[in-house]
Length: 215
Image (spheres, rainbow, N blue to C red):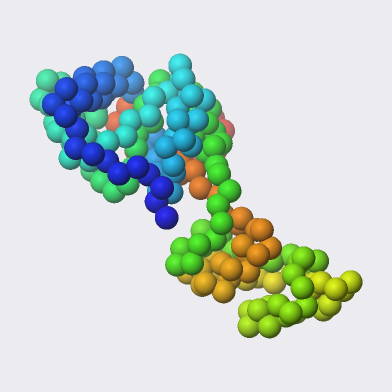
């Protein structure tokens, strides 16, 4: 579920302010991380902004507005390398502008992740395993575990899972029964935060994996 606030249309003054802010960023910074912001709440975004203060700036906004600002900037600066980033202004993305050390900014972008429950209908970003051990559930709920083919036994008046079970595979849709079980066991298997789509440096676009390669 995308927890982002609904974007209201910007007033004339706000648009002017946005144009000025983005134009300054385009003039000041040479490097950009294009980041995915799905499932990232505003509080989480603010914490990331704080962590980056003085090193990088996050720009969010409507893609159409970003493209307009960029077009005006390129008109004033013909042939500027930022022309190559225009095609990335689509979908639910943000831009992290910086002149700082790229691997350090990458770490700050990825650091702030929030644990999240598995909701029915969500696509699992990773495998989810239910560990063996006591569940705190009473014997009357045995059927619930049987439906999901989870081996159990009764120990000291409560249901115990006898063998760890791979409940959901990465890429699968979370079903209502799996979601209910994980909630019952108080397991929050996913975590959400900014993801890095690509890195832009003086006109070159590359995968964040390149930042792992030592010079």
